[in-house]
Amino acid sequence: MMTKTTTVLATVLALAMVVTPAAAAVGHGATSTTDAGSSAAPGATHASVESSSTTDHCAYPQTLRDASGTQIELTEAPERVVTLGPASAQTMWEFGAQDKVVGVTQFAAYLEGATEKANVSGAGQTRISVERVVAQEPDVVLAENVTSPETVSKLRDAGVTVYYFNNSESIDDVYRKTAVTGQLVGECDAAVDSVRFMKEEMAIVENATDGEEPRDFLYALFGYTAGENTFINSGLTAAGGNNLAVDVVEFPPSGYAPINPETVANLSVDWIVYPGTPSAIPQNEAWNRTTAVQEGNLVAVDRNQISQPAPRVVLAVRTLAKTWYPESYEQANESLRGSVQVDADVYGQNDDEETTTTAATTSGGDDGTEMSTAMGETDATTAPDADGSPGFGPVAVLAAAALVVGALARRD
Image (cartoon, rainbow, N blue to C red; front, side):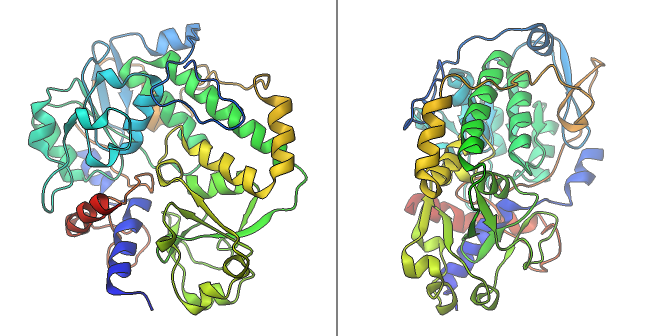
């Protein structure tokens, strides 16, 4: 049985994984070259890659539509950006555009220089301080979909331009989100290079895992696990894993759900993957008797990589591929690193493919919001609602979780 502390932690972590049904209602009211063992250099300046498509998408004025269908108008390239989640902050750092960032949340503190930015996190039960955000006089606010509808509405009522991101359900969605971020902040060339970096890493992993026997695993997240329609599962399976939870756990649309000990006891779990801290693995007989625990097949991945829909998620995928298939990965890395060709023309694709993240053809905009919640935020900034219904809806639970979040962030 989980302790009270562990139960609360599981609750806090889980809502960062889910889609908030309340969203729709608000909407209607461094060169980055890496060697075999390196990661993308934080804040690296990506090589310039310019095409007619990138030029067009970063031309101003422009209007973009967010995940609720809200039209966001930008008359010129933003010079002051506030990020309301660590994933967007990480993306700005990967662009080498951190100088444009004037405000971040406390969960972006792992990024070099982030603590020198204004902290827009709220106190007590408030995850984001509207007053702190407004005080930064931002040209645009990048709102991760863990941000509450009320916060976005208050910011817009204060005259702040806010773009609310959609839920990322796959690594492909992370590519698209990166592209949209580049378009929003006038960094299209850097976005193309970031996507190229990600796709190069994924191509090497794909080559390394091709023909290999899949590794049967569970993703351990304080009593929860990831299923289909999550970018975490997308990355783990791309690394050569077979997610045992997919066929035995009933997942809500969010893609994240509790996994009970009885289910674990009936599975042949060869590997356990977990974000950062071993305490993410439940301490009970069912988990302790798995082959993974008995044989020490436990893979820790950086929580700031695996838990955020941002460029560095591919580094977590790489970690797994290197762990599961060391010889194959080494061969693939040696043969493909620096020579693999990928399609990184993220702005040359069909603009109508994803209406929630594409540039609109009109120049006008309205004042709605996009509201959907994703797992993407490390340090778990939200929690599931108590009724256990698909989507874990009520935003009110966010406030209840905030007190625990602060303590966890300081402890970790």
